[in-house]
Length: 175
Image (cartoon, rainbow, N blue to C red; front, side, top):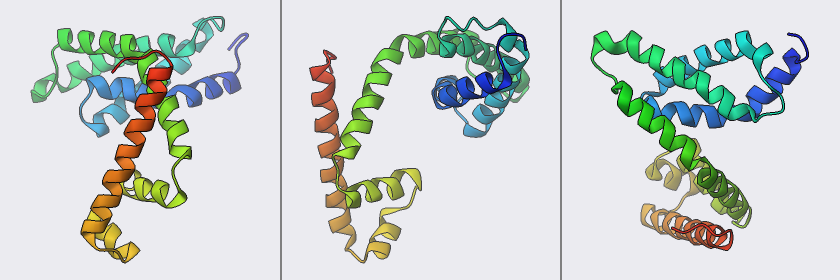
């Protein structure tokens, strides 16, 4: 590594890893396969990091490597018959990059709107979606009827949707 250090690589990669993963998942349906592609992408980025121009954004540069790793993965699994065609992968990749500004705005709005919820509402969303707990198990844990929890979850999601929609509209995005 000449001018760019290993620490700089780690900072850039860590800051963009989730975005790159979402980009890869657009083209690779299975999470385990996407994880493999991400590992190969990270290795390729590390090998070529000395060619990175720090004056340019990291994510588009890294996405090119991810795209090529998706194609390589596609060739590896082609014998198993479970893959998208190269044309589909190319279209998905292009559409994902084109949609990135809106996705970024949605993420910012969601993050802001989540802070406006009560701690109880955030906990409910966290356990339901991030921990992937069932409504039944959450109801038991919270000692609430299942129907009540469904209603609470519905109202919370509606509140988030309305908040995100208003935030996006105020930034000039249309639904």
